[in-house]
Length: 99
Image 1: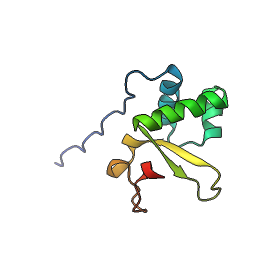
Image 2 (image 1 turned 30 degrees about the vertical axis):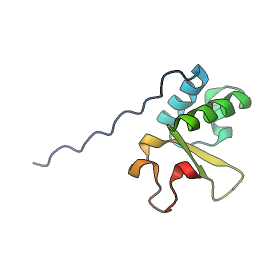
Image 3 (image 1 turned 45 degrees about the horizontal axis):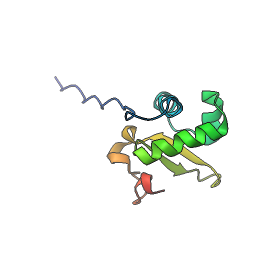
């Protein structure tokens, strides 16, 4: 019999972040990569609050951003721990966190 596949660690948000950042983090964990507009709709929070929460999460290094190639005015935000390769894209040599 084959050995069971390793279970990826459950992403967690660092202590000391505001409740809005925790809510955005939980939404990204459950729904996967989302744009700023999608996060506003999914969380029901004002755009400024979502922008602040995303900034705090990016500073903490728990989420990353990837440019939407169909519309470069938008970025997709994602939980870094859910991306294989320690937050690096398998298609691009630049780490996701640097974009």
